[in-house]
Picture 1 (tube, rainbow over the protein chains, first blue to last red):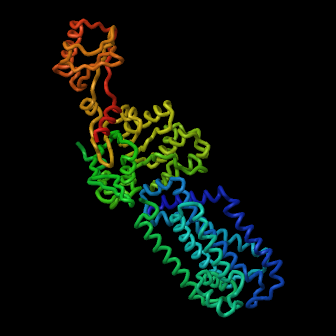
Picture 2 (picture 1 turned 180 degrees about the horizontal axis):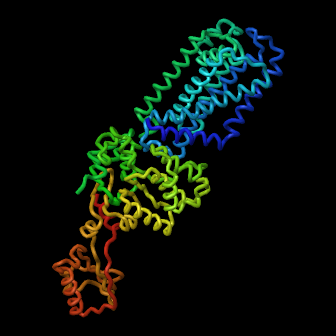
Picture 3 (picture 1 turned 90 degrees about the vertical axis):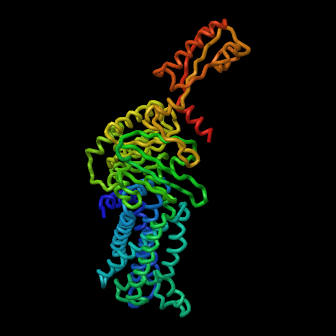
Length: 253
Length: 315
């Protein structure tokens, strides 16, 4: 593997973030903080504890996950979509680099941004609610693995999209609803039995549940199921990307 | 002759919709030459370049770059090539310095600020190095694309319509840059709509039409072989028809009969045997003998553009 092209892509993507600091970092931090203020401090004080955890603290892992999923997808999809849109993708395709190097560059940069953002939001949450992290290593593992997996998904969306509208389609119409309905704001024990069963088909539930377990040691599904779901997601995304590069789908006519 | 730096063999490209853009292309590009690829819109020029550079998958056939198959040994093959695309495509909000350095890294080369500085200076971009691309003029943006293509020190440079939309002064400056590159050993392949450009710069000409290579020829030989010359005599009094005494010369009347045109083979003009010079002398003597008086005369040689138009029209 040649590290120069990986570094070039990675640094160029991070440089884009620095140029758009307000949009990339400040905006998601502020919008997530608003959730903490409204659901944590204001409404949360009137909601009883869930599994012995105050409501404000309970929603922290779900909110971090909500931001992590949407930002990973947005960052990675825009990273590869913009060169396609501007035409500068010619340089990427004519360069002596492997597909793996391209993916590591783009997905690595997108995942880095998401993880940093996740940690900033975690630190911000500490200003609003008392925080404890029971399994910090597991927390970091979930954070990093989820960021990588959803950055891979974003990369796929960026290649698939042929317009800005499609770029927004998946984050807005798929990921956000799945995250809201995947237990970000509640435990699935609070749902009627039928809807508990339905929710088990929502893959995001497993990510939030595992992440919440790393904070408080409580979860809706087992840790093994959460890890298995992340790895399954990762495997599917890698297989799709491998197919895209093998066939040149939407990249090479 | 040494091994060609690029060898294209039996190359075909059919797009998904069924359009066959390239048909059984065989083409050798010689080391160190400037090769101009000419063809009307949609002839297949850009597709051919795109297949060689790895932007488009060939349907079948082979491209070998400096001894390396561009599919099997794509790293080696692509590292030798710099591509300047037709469209002005770049990251609008990046600075000149950053984008050119990015290109070098992308092609797997370690940072070399000295080389980038030389490239930017040679393209008179050094003063603009900290400017964002969005603030540059069209001509400057095109130079940036050339700088990006040269950032990784390629041995082969593809210029796809390099001077499209560039004013005359800047075009001539770019020609100088291209010549300097050739002198430094870079092989240059350019496509152009400006036949003047090919005529001015190219060592060899290739003509592509409807996805087929129509001809590949040394420029001078092509112009000798397919070019023609005309001698125009501006008559004192206009004629209704060519006098029978001059019928052997196959003359034509133009400008309402006030010009008498004699067309002859450029390759024979001034030849060792001097066939055409003696014919012209005989023509002038016969014109005088026929009682015609001319007040002026001039000769005109067909340009590459005339040759190109004739070739494409024939097919």
